[in-house]
Image (cartoon, rainbow, N blue to C red; front, side):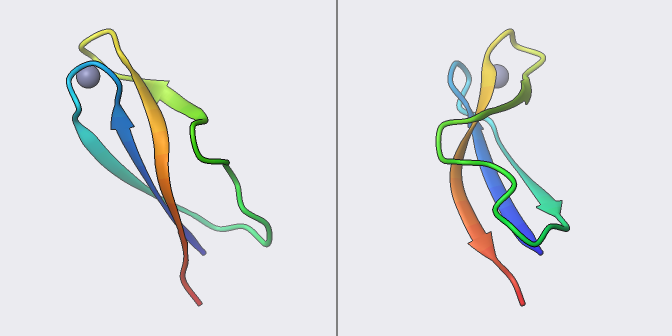
Length: 50
Ligand SMILES: [Zn+2]
């Protein structure tokens, strides 16, 4: 399981996702979704949880 922390590049809102996967589901800097403010959530941190 991976904990993905992402931050909006405009309003700096943070969100975290939990992803079940054998390999890292994202890379640092990947866009995971769009923020309601019009910015993009970009991956900042990836942590593996065992
Ligand atoms: Zn935003």
